[in-house]
Amino acid sequence: MGGPGFSGATKGFDAEDISSIFEEFFGAGRSGFGGRGAGFHERVQARPQRGRDLRVQTTISFYTAAHGGMESLALERGGAKQTIEVKIPKGIADGATLRIAGKGEPGRNGGPPGDLLLTVRVAPHPLFRRDGLDVVLELPLTIAEATLGATVSVPTPLGERVELKVPPGTSSGAKLRVRGKGLADAKGKQGDLYAVVKIVAPKRLAPEDRQALERLGRTLPTPRTGAGWT
Image 1 (cartoon, rainbow, N blue to C red):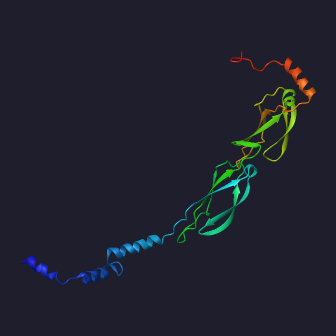
Image 2: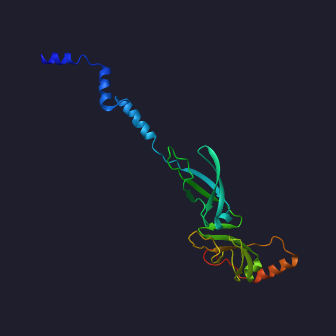
């Protein structure tokens, strides 16, 4: 008996009645799972969101890498083109990445912008090659300069010139060190300049010079000695 009576009591409810009950207890717009889910999604979307980081690459001169300085950089942020000034620290290495705060993509819903991640490439120099903060320079010498010794003027990456003393009897491949004439970093650490000797033989000789070298050649000891040569 109880079963049929209970069944009969529920026949008067339909979907509209159930919806009205939910609206009475929970408020309009939250009577169904779908309605509540939509409101939750809207609240998530409205949260402040940080902008994406922007990754770009630029190439600077060897001189700028040595001394540091300001570089103009053209960007496209948020669909708009703009130019910013970026400070390059002195002694920066090729391939280093600088982070410039707040110069990435704009944020959403009042969120902060992202950062700019700038990869710096250093253009090669016709004379200098970097080895950390040290700088290597190939130093061409004549046979006479290498044999007798000499004082030669050498450029440095800092834009000045120094007088370098070449000892008598210097061979090709010898490294002559000039202290403190390499690159310095932002912390004050200083590198050195290394001049690597390359003896350059003359391609043309006057007859008397050739005869003098031939006489000298007959008196000089051979440099090809030791294991494997004899």
